[in-house]
Length: 139
Length: 139
Image 1 (cartoon, rainbow over the protein chains, first blue to last red):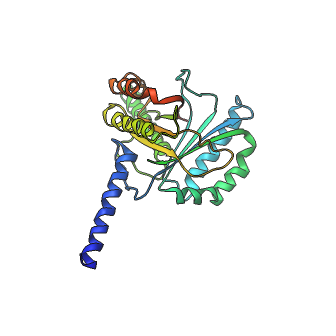
Image 2: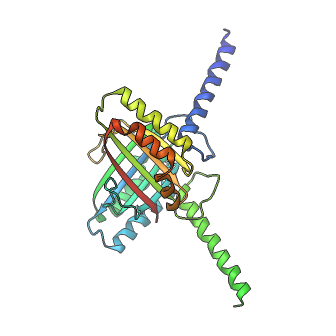
Image 3: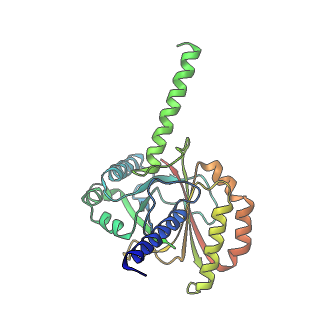
């Protein structure tokens, strides 16, 4: 195989891998930009010191909305609160869910020290007493 | 306000609410179909009876991949395994993460009794000893 042919072959193989990655991420939904690497999912659940305080919850949510706009490497986000679903296996004791998709682990690592993230922690961490984080990557 | 004018006003207000919903879901990423209602996020973490069994893990993942193809109401899915990130707040004791987006709660309710979902539980539930589910909806 010539050097040129080999380069073309490797490029085509990379393209196939990227397309396979899209199928894993999006299921039946289409997304604008196919990821070339393992998608990184960062899911944080917040428990507040005052779980019934609408004011504290609103402060946290406003902080997250600001963070979603300002953090550079977030690809997709979802801010949620527990649904009304209620079965033995469901944990609905938290107050706020913060779900992030990153292109890859490197982008998540950047997020951890993004000034917008550090500012969010400084401004909002007084309202929560506990967080649990689940970080997962494409199989 | 005439009846006709009022109907137009309500319709316009509904449209604005739908657009706001999109912004919450997608952040900086664009999606093909804007949801008209509260997006429902269903995140399941699996702990296996034999956490080190690659065979059991592969069986569960294959079952989830089949389920992702066959379940009618799933809008977006992600199958993951714990990342190498390791801080006090991170729970990385589970073996497999199964994250689903639904258009709304009604679609998630349909999924719970979708024949493909029941078949998956029948075929794969022997490999897991514990699941924790977090269901959340748009703020």
